[in-house]
Length: 166
Image 1: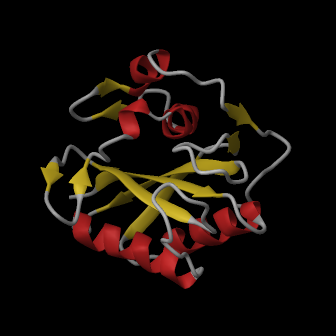
Image 2: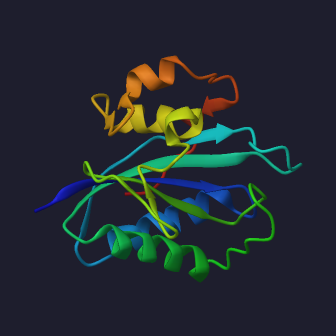
Image 3: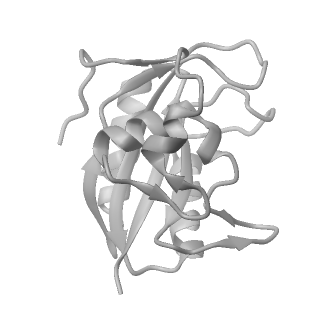
């Protein structure tokens, strides 16, 4: 049974757009994963207090019947393939591929929390998600449009001049 899978991708080092393009292409090439939508590109102020460059962020929607752990493993393999280094929490990164939601699945263990534990409060996830799926719903939290209305969006700017190739 295919479920909707939501990924949030971000990059703030090097050729940010190229890293987003590459990671999106690798998600699309994953057996058992079919991309159904990619948001526009947003430029985002960093979150977490660490001094660093601005991010480019997108949301990628897919359909898959793969288990959530396999989807997480693929996201981490893509990050590792681009040389992501986890030097500090919320620090700068070449690529970040976060698994936000897998259908209606809810889980919380040492390896994976679904939905992503902070997605409902992050404009850099909610704004591009709403862009690509206006009817989006985050299990356990509600409609993405309502969640977005409750958060500060001033640090998230659309970048219509930046387009990912299809």
